[in-house]
Length: 141
Image (tube, rainbow, N blue to C red; front, side, top):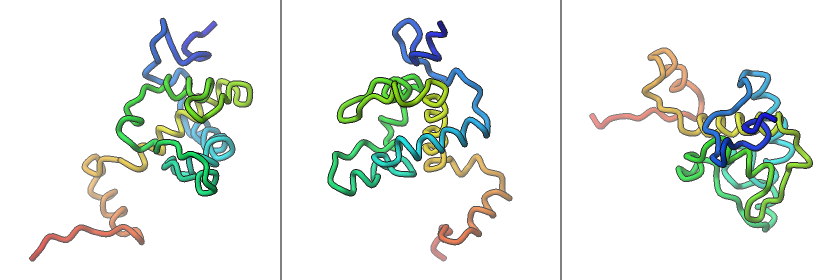
């Protein structure tokens, strides 16, 4: 048995990296599964403000909080598999490869909300700043 793949752990410790290839197909599958199983509570962007929460149910933590962001990949897999707090287990509803695809998509969501702008090229920064809704920072004259 592939312990990391099926449990998210090796020797009782959560794995730090996703044990499947993460590519466009994996991310698209993760997005699709996330939208079906996770977004009702966690919201489409992972901020914990899904439709269920808007109807008065307990709000899960945002995936964008530092304490949540810092969890290893195996932790997310374990929570999907076994549940945590008010969240019930999806182990019987979501197959292992799809759980890892969801973890990969959660990581993409986290990156999308906190990408270090200084890692962008000058051309990428200009494209970002020219998009509607993106405010440019202006220094006082």
